[in-house]
Length: 371
Image 1 (tube, rainbow, N blue to C red):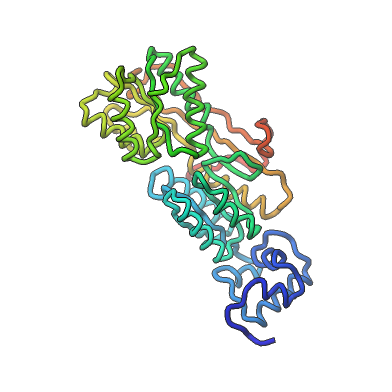
Image 2: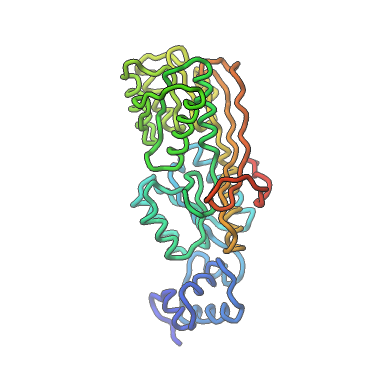
């Protein structure tokens, strides 16, 4: 059997007398294959000259597995810490990491996922765009590649890990209501994202708990970007009456909202109280210092790798959803000068399958922390 140009997995499968999925499992190590079958596939790959960069040679030798990471906002502080956690845990597990930025565009995301699959990654970690089901998700299913969803949790039976969005959001919004605000707005993230939906539900939950009616005019879309946050805050300031407090759904929108407040000459917290999702290193050097919900982003990234390793080791294991605790950093922007009621961290939760949220012992291990 001579060497051929443009050898595909289908050609290897036909020559080996096995299915394409079996060839994929041999290459990616995603499912156990009988030793004789595995060796036959490897022999055919060698005879045909099938190349599987960057990991074919290492996998054939039983060593390094490469995983792919598809996500947006890799330049943000939250994204950097998330990537750091994934990278560190991957290194600890002896795995290589390929990373691509989707820029939160579904067409680009599809190209990113296709490119990572073309590199024959053994598994993938993905923070999906709003409309990924017909593109990126379809590709992952077609190639039978194990994956873990991070941050933007889905209503489906898949492995995923993120923060407690709803309870954290409810806690900081309820704090504003508790200290006397009755007109509290929200600058929500990009429509269609799980994080946007859950943080908005937390906002609504806080109002229900305190018996305060929501004015729908105070719910505005910031599109998860700095410019979106700037426009959204200007829109809230134009309302009559304007809100006296605002919950902002992520760090990028917070920067834009602060610019809008400064341009309008609005004092924080004297004329506008702020609470924000996502903490960042300089949140406590702003004037006033920002009250924020800090995500355990490094730990989320590390846990995602652990879930992927578990899936690679046991393809039949039940899907898990992990929600890690967030911490509220009480500072001055909420108007209580750091002396308001303390909002505690929320308990981590592990959900076996996504059909029902229940608390179970954590089989993944101790929560990773930033070294």
